[in-house]
Length: 76
Image (cartoon, rainbow, N blue to C red; front, side, top):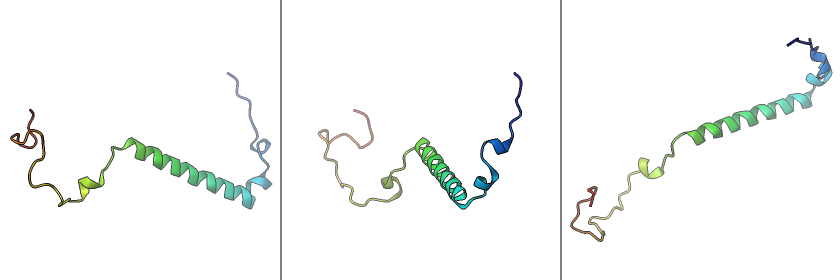
């Protein structure tokens, strides 16, 4: 494969690259990229439930199961 040298000024001229609107556009693209990267990483992590972190004191004192004689946490 032969490489063809490409001058950087052929893509966009320097006057466009140093303009204010191009800087604003590139900042928007950078923030958008970081946002979507963060969302993708959050989606990979396991779900965290609020009930795991906050103690709930409104638990029942007795079981309301259809098998009331079975201890909580044991298999039937």
